[in-house]
Length: 268
Image: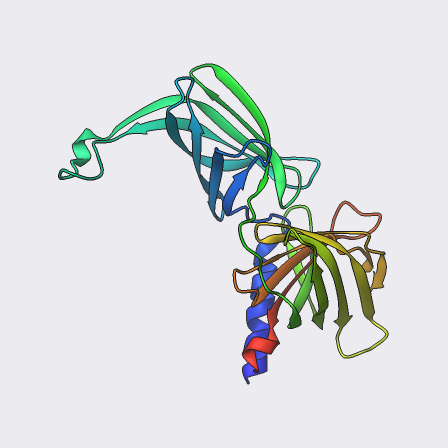
């Protein structure tokens, strides 16, 4: 009964993530430490907070509510919204008076994702335009070695997904980090159902971008839905749940999507 509940939970997660990634968390430009942007995405709404410095060298804080728009060549939609500056009374030393909160529209902002972990931020403040490459901010390693069990599906460009009857089992066999703690080598195996011949073995390099791990030097592998190459996966903060999306060779759509729960923690 417990395994059936796990399988149902995993299949529901797979069916919900479709082609669109979730970009929650802090992003930055590693060549320009000191400013950043935070995305908080809930379904088709995204709240954006931008922390930068003005021409006077003083910190500035802007916010926006953005919505998905045109689908980019990366397969992700762009996000656009109006950008506002908010001023408030001091947050300490005196009672807060909500009536003193002021909003001013200063321009617009757009986020153009290139991958699950990188993209371009475009915004303007009082007619001063800015375009910056950004990526997820990594500030701590995520432990995700272990055995995972879940479901997989294929998702069309419009986000409709077909969940397959076969289960997916993924084993993160070994992770060897480099000295920087965010790059290294990984060895993993994925099987479809209980048949050994429906199996993909991958070994290559990884780089952590926040909650997303990007892979390189991974060989393509035959699967029940076509040839796959492991490109990236996202992990929960404690590594107990992973999600992955992979293009199917020769097709822009559908996309192979899987979601799995770490059984090592469920069954200690």
